[in-house]
Image 1 (cartoon, helix red, strand yellow):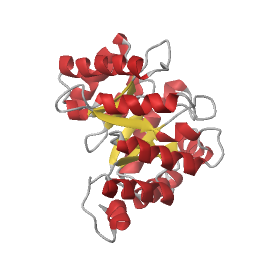
Image 2 (cartoon, helix red, strand yellow; image 1 turned 180 degrees about the vertical axis):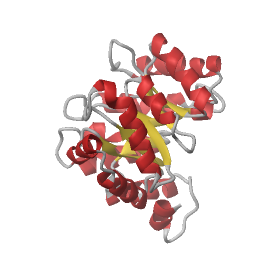
Image 3 (spheres, helix red, strand yellow; image 1 turned 90 degrees about the vertical axis):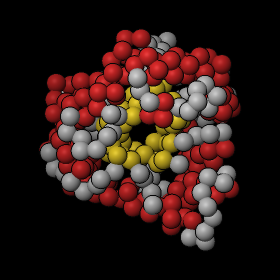
Length: 264
């Protein structure tokens, strides 16, 4: 299970202030905390912290100061591909692009960009009309993304398909459909594309968020989930991921399996 730490995001006050003041302290502290917690990649999102015209430069700064303290893969998160490319230009190691949906215009920008920079790519099972409700509709978008990977030459193992979970308090009926989609995505190609979820979305606005997050993580892993963008500093979440890997026979059991998960 690849945990992508979600905390370096301009939506959070401390990261917003860091971006506005070009003060790397909070960014670097969160990079180190998340890596210690078990993250093996870090999501970087400028968000609304700075004006649109400044976001490409802000992303470059975010990449550079994060790389000063961490060698983890960086997941560059923006709806603007120019902002993402600005970050890709200064990444020392292959990165991940977060994200594109299945709209043709975006596909034609995102897939060649990923190939050009040797990056992994997150593809969302939606278009401009929004998130579909049922598994079959999600899977249809997943098939389009798989076809695009073949068309543009992106290795299938570098495509991460996100079937998009909604908060349990407003989209409870989506949960089983997402789990069905995760299972079926693995049948679309050989080798199969990877799968990913913005895990914290399932608990947005809900009580006992950690409980919902880690429960859906275990359910997802049993259905073929490979990666999550999540709270890497939640010890219960990383313990659940470590235990699920053992119980699903994805890693060899040892008595220190939790410690091994966080330090590998």
